[in-house]
Structure formats: structure tokens, C-alpha cells
Image 1 (cartoon, rainbow, N blue to C red):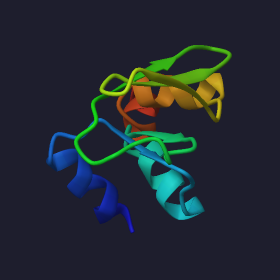
Image 2: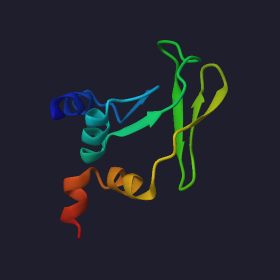
Image 3: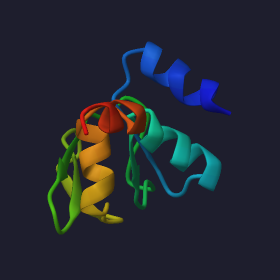
Length: 95
């Protein structure tokens, strides 16, 4: 359901980090411009500050609180572009 993503965004959250996502949530997140990052979250605890670095070849997370750096699942350039533009609908409006 798309509402799950829009509620997260309405709360001011710009990215979600998890071990995995349901395919429908992942797709809805990308379509709506929400960054979703898959990685091992076992070193995270509630309240930890996290920074995310997305490049053309890799996605890295840094648990700022614990000074731990993690590699995440890469995001294809087209998905990165959709997120930067604010979602799929906004991306197609610019074409």
C-alpha cells in the first residue's frame, strides 16, 4: 500500500534502512521518492545517528553514534535519479 510510504514521508523521514523490504514497499518507496537502503542492521540500536552515502557504484552507511561503516545493497543509477527527482511521477513530468 502506498500509504505506508506517504506516512513515513509525512513524518519528515527521508530514508529507511532495513535488512530487507517487501517488494511492493520497495517499489512504492522508489515511486514516491523515499530512499530505501538494504543492509545488515544488527549493529544499530534505537537512537543511533546514521549517515548515508549513495554513489553510482555503492551505498555506504555510517553509524555515527558507534563509528561503524557498512556497505549496503547498491542502487542502480535510474533508481537514484528517480529518488533525486522526488519520485517516479515527478521524474516523468520533467521529460
